Image (cartoon, rainbow over all chains, first blue to last red; front, side, top):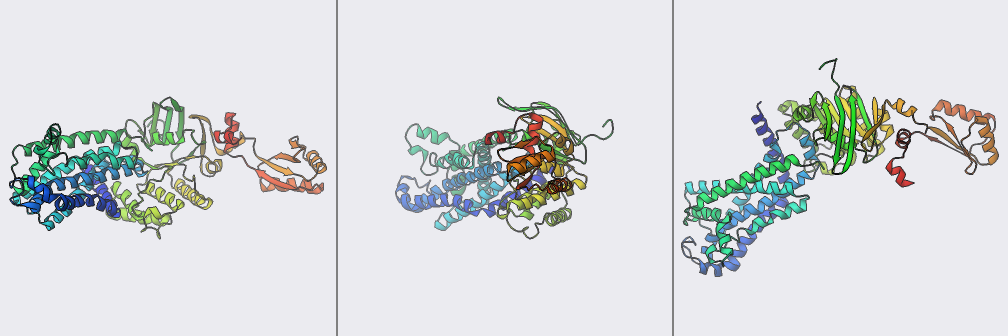
Length: 267
Length: 318
């Protein structure tokens, strides 16, 4: 077998291990999915009626009131789900790194990248499953996407790419953390970013300074592209920016994570 | 490979420091293939650091190390393919069952499905884990965890096995079981490098022993060679009266007597034969012994004999 085949075989073995671990530890996944669902309910039923007054009907998917706000906020909630589940990635990676089994892996002839890619792929599956659950809740509440088959394909691809990028970032954060507790806190800022972008209200409504930040931070083009694909709002240059941000975060985090992994001292 | 077979482990001039602290200094070691080698030393002597360097976990600052014919720096994957490591801390996945842990190892060693299953079943049987195979490793006792840990190390049939303090923290029975497993492995022709704090463990298991003190090898030899350097083995006799003490001292021609505690020490290893002769001698002279205890040399004695200073723990206790 070639080196590449070994990498793939070992990654698959470790992917299976990590998925099994996630199934054995379901409380974490449930807790992580719970947060965006609570925010969805909160924002639609508590603030939604009021917030919908500030939305143009184009942004609200042609609906008025609470239903219109549900259409507006769902893409933001979906990206919040990504940010919430990658917190789990950092925790799981840090748990592994602080346990003895990682030293065993490192004394075995396992393909270098396989330990981390095993984690990343398991997290990607976990994240996409979480998003499906949250989306189902949104649809049950009345979210009405207008997307055609091609739009759906684009939406899934975009979410997967962005999740892939944030998962590598969380992996690096999990490796950089000295303890599991630290690892569960450092990626927390990611869950705030949908608020400080166009996830919950249009960035244009924010004061100077914050508005510029909200316009240029990576969640905004991803939110706008996803919103456009799902509910037909204007996408424009957001799509290119969304892909560029995702690729840049993924590459930078991959390099960082691999360096941390190689340099890591045994316990 | 010139000059016959290459040693399983060959280390020369190994040095390592963490920041300002020198952990290893100019360590030379050779372990012949198929033998058991014990690295004996107290906590903090640098035993684990040597294991970590030889098992490619960390790099040395100086010197050279070859394991199973591969340089640890030049060809770490070659080393990894030949070794198995059971560290001081358990290296198993607590969320998975014993069987799943072993299957994971089989998959990572790229064993074919049937071969992997057969190997896992064989190891579960051999380490008495069949009944617990389907239970999560987190429910295992300390002894079971060590057995599973060692079983995981063996899945890939390594040629060189590193065991870092394999019995520390185990109860006496689990310790015996572990010793039996290690002896079985040695009988199978595997090279074993083990570290321990216990002289009796090294004595029971190892062909050769090296004593490590503050990062340096201070003595090396077979168990018998080392013990010959230790004057510590003796029988301690306590008497009820000063008269009995004097009579015994005269009879046994010994100077090592303590008149206050009414104790004399007779050199000897406490073997049944010599003990019987000693008791017969005193019995014939009608000298009554109040208490008798046998003192066998332990790590502290060996240590004192070869370094001239007690182990740090011993020093702390005093």
